[in-house]
Length: 356
Image 1 (tube, rainbow, N blue to C red):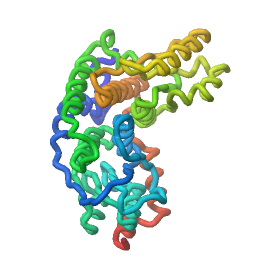
Image 2: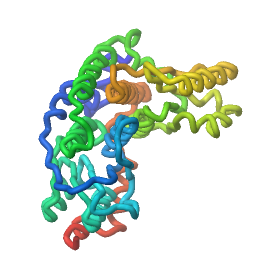
Image 3: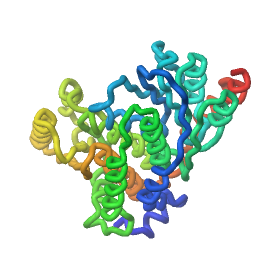
Image 4: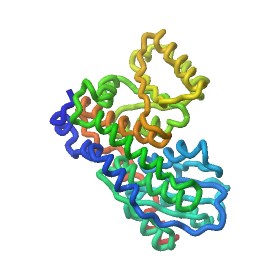
């Protein structure tokens, strides 16, 4: 089951082939040269993006939250918080370079005289940056923005390092690349179903609604999996994190939907006692209802490698699930139709840039 011929027949655009090359793309992405803004003092950080371009920001927030000394938030909107000032670092990223919300957020950051840098594969964000002399880093766009994650993530990490916000993360980056290569050896399309955890997960989720639970430090992977299940597999999915789910979400597991919902628990190889005991309690509740959750344990020696390795496996699982459902994972017709409607109803980005 899920041999390459079967995957290729459904995945007509060959999205899976990009994931076959992710370990090599990680090497390429980590070598991208970045353009840095000048600054006097950085008091807070905003990473602005939407969809697949926001995932790298989520990863950075998870990874750095235990160590970073200034506030860092992720903004998925066209509006920035009122506290943005000349001492706020704003990194606005859009793989396509044409994301309306991100361009508007960059414009607002520029108007507020924030420390601004942009990341894209070109498009209108690059045009806006050139017009206003904003440091712009050009990255590679793969087949779809969501598959281009590494080409946004690693340059953003290089920016934070180059601005002395974090120490040069050479070990963390190298370990992440090693982890991706190791995981490729278990989830590649050429690895048989019996030894392939991504294929097995896809099979378990078939015919149900995935409910993804994680500890907060893996919430980026949970959100990313939900998004890829939406875009690649074309199914509904939901995600939440510990310990919050102990105060609300768990109560809903007591009705006729239990046989439809498919819990997925995203675990770290080493967990603190609070996280470990909560997961244990949830599994006991599921078992009492004859529900078997899917436990996915991250690999790697660092938090960054844990997150990236897990995302790699889960992304590929969403492609395998699309294959089982016989839907091409690449096209996103509903998203395209909605964007077209909004473009017809709202001021064009070209006009916004022209007037800025």
